[in-house]
Length: 429
Image (cartoon, rainbow, N blue to C red):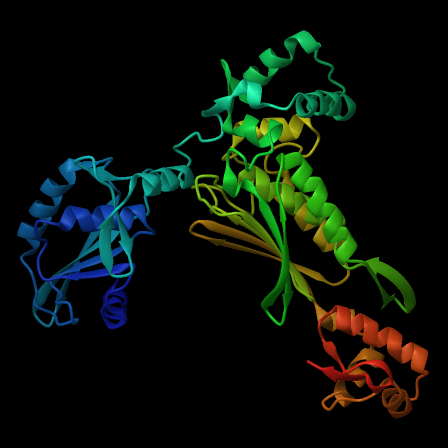
């Protein structure tokens, strides 16, 4: 850090990542813990709350900080920089985001806005799960007798079909224990997701398909049950809602799927396999006219790199079950497969948005490659509503051809229909 960086921090003011303190004070370890448990940040000692430089005794401040950190478990990673500003000394502490939950005296704290507060037990569990230090999916949750026999049979039949592995029926329970679906006489969380109706035991394990129009929800559908059935049901519905579009590729007209279905299926499976089930929120699939967004609760585990997504999964027992049932291949391959499918598509773009407690995969249509010269000509004259006959006359194209272009552009959310019957008009959005 240099002097320019320091001045920029002071100019930015206190925030979720920046704390001003005239002196270290007795609560300095709480501030460090809170930043480490959030996204990290900077503490500026020798700066008043309003950004005024008041200076501090650097040596004394360093001693107080060193002594304070002795009571923090585990000790967070920090670095310090000393500055002379307006003939006054300022100490900058840079706090790294911790890969494990930091606490003091049995209490953990977190930074919210410019404030600090203790974490509840539920929040401690959620954060620990985000950091990969809580093994949620292999924890026992319900009596094994709650498992549906037909779901267990489906699983072993499916494994034989997709993996070529046949397990003797007498060994089924033993096998489920070996892969983390059961412990002694109980189902684990992963086992409950696979062999019960899921939401009966874990209410927030459902998935929701949300229909969007002009960035506003206009309808939704919920999916519950075992996770393997949820995958099949929502995938079927998304296929029904999307279709093929006729485009010109290298001077030839060709019908192309609006979205690569393998990529959509993989994104849904990825959300179910790697979400943070400690967060009590459902997975959501947003169906827009020009994009599909798959959002799952939980960010990436520390150290996971999207450019090289080989990693240990957050829910290994659940991933074992999904693998045996033929839904996933080797860990980390899903993201690469989605990339490969989108890359082959003539007009789609792929985006990842990873935030604390949330991960989005977005497949969006690039209209620059999707629309032909006729579409562009029509959009230009639809600044005011027009009937199909008026459009046909204006661009010199038959009415049936115009209606085909209207249908395509309405599907993409570029044109809307006004009125009914013979009075129908079309207008660009």
